[in-house]
Amino acid sequence: MGTFTRYSREDISISTDKVTSNTWTNNTNALTTTFTSSTQAVFTDAKAQGNFFLEIRKGEDTVSSSVEYTVSYGHRYGSGSENFTNTAGALGNTATKCIYNQYRQLAFGDENSNFNFNGFVPNDIHVLNIDRGRFKHNLKQGSLNLKLKGNNTIHLTDDSITTTGSATITNIGRQFNVISGSDGVMSGSELNQTPEGSGSYGFIYPDVGIIILNGEALRNYDETYWTEGDAASAQKKNQQIYGAIKTGASFELDSEERISSQFIFTRIKNAAYNYTTNPSYIDNNGDLLISDFVDSPTTYITTIGLYNDSNNLIAVAKLSQPLKKDFTTEALVRVKLDY
Image 1 (cartoon, one colour):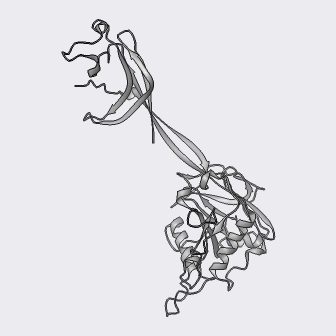
Image 2 (tube, rainbow, N blue to C red; image 1 turned 180 degrees about the horizontal axis):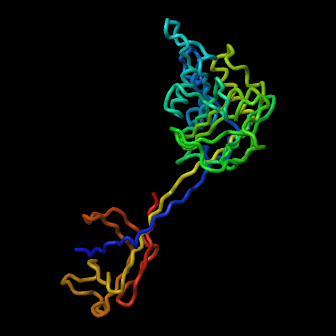
């Protein structure tokens, strides 16, 4: 029967560290070249998938390349895309209205609240939804660097470094403003960054990987971003915002992971664990093979087992080399568990 030693509270310590990595596939820092899939970007009718979102991939081979993010267009009144049906009572139900309702329900918990960008409420939004498989626990605040290029070029970031205090907390976690600038620092001092006073350029929700862009602010900066509520389909709006991202050829975003480590200090005192039940120590008659061990028993510690209260082995720690142990020595082994 083995001997067990219970750990005390003083033997266990827990720490948490934040680890940052690139968000995009293959640890890519900035997306410069991306593609859409002809099989997903289908616009055959008002309910076709491409009218709701476009999947953006790093590789041209859509079979082997993973989705990096999606782009969508939403309008609170449903303008910009066709009605699902002409049936009485169902008019106005469109892909753009579904997108707007979906994201305001996520952020605010209802379909009555509107996106308010520093006091300005636009009718339309553009949504960048980072694929969940691309980031760890959350997107790192201050890491957004997105270039949109049309007739003019906009460099967008979040204001997490500029802003003091806590972020606004919503149903989907923290909310920061998307503003003109870089590395989390705003250019200038005003959130209303267009002459028309159309508010900030949007919001970023780092805990769920969502970026909401203010359609009116984009248009006021650059007329390339078309007229709100025009006759163009959601297809064209999705493709046009993606075109601005693709032409800008620079989309940087880091992810952040919290790794908790439990340190277990295994203290082996001089009088403990000097004997062994290893059968290689005895002969067929049960006598010690090495006579010196009779008066001076010696063991070599190679493994530390962690057991629960039922003496079930739940974890094993291996030493890099055997640790000699006898009555004249003590040992302290630090075991680290990451999770």
